[in-house]
Amino acid sequence: MPDTPVLPTRRSLREQERRALARVRESRTGSAAAMAVPRPDAAGPAPTARPSRVRSTVALSFAALLAAATSLSTVAPGGSLSSVQADAIGATGEPAPTPQELLTASVDVPAVSRDGYGATTPEQLAQARAEERAAVAAEKAAAAGYRTASTYTNNTDSAVQWPFPVGVPISSRFGPRSSPGGIGSTNHKGVDFTPGQGTPINAIAAGVVSHVQQSDAGGLGVYVVIDHVIDGQAVSSWYGHMLTGSPLVSEGQPVLVGQPIGSVGNTGTSTGAHLHLEIHEGSTPVDPYAWLLARN
Ligand SMILES: [Zn+2]
Image (tube, rainbow, N blue to C red; front, side):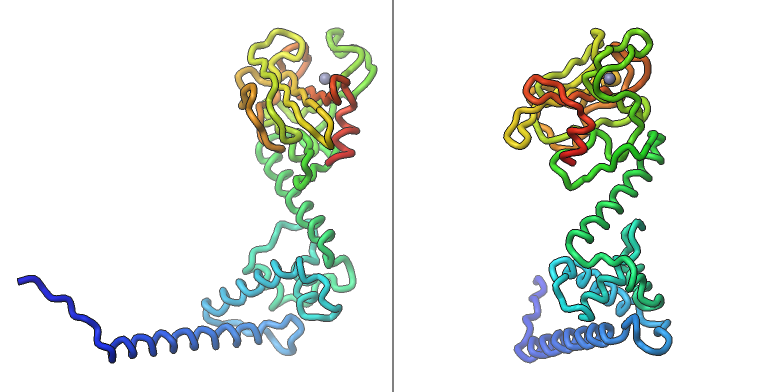
């Protein structure tokens, strides 16, 4: 005969409920106590040994306050949120701190740059975040062996972006020039970026791929053209001299801004690995550097 499951009695159910409530109350009390402790300007030494459960609760609470700070930047000066925000974001140009680091900074270190720079407006916060992202991108590029340069700073929040996430060397600008190596054009219709062979090239804006030249037939060699509508105007971006076999897109494919579309190469009429980028407004080539600078 099979075992009969033992059904819970009303009494045992009530007992379970009582225990669950007690657990909830206990954890609430723990959070409240934790929030009361770590004031950066509190007198006396910071408590050193606290249970890890409490520490993580505090870390989470600070992360939540930080997230809320963006929309609460109108809190009156001296308000507790402003203080937390200024302390946490005050040091710019550094990698985003983890919640645990924020906790440590708040507990152990006196207020950072209270009378110096402090990100207190949404614009300043956005700027601080953009600088952090740029620093991370630069580190990645350096780690991958790509050449970087302070020719521009790419704003990753923009609908129009540079073809590389960090500034890279530019070897030739738009306009009249002497023919490079005797084979290059004397009226340069683009800008030449030289981060190194194999560097991923990103779409400068959302659009639709209108042409992919997979084989090297001279001229721009292996290249991709993307059609965009930007500020109501038909614009196309041309990416020349790509590495053979590197195009990642096909004709008719929609692409997003910043999406990798291929890699820097040396195909076509080229005297060294570079991206030749052209921007056409309608069918007229314009200076890509000035154009991107104005829109990114
Ligand atoms: Zn060129």
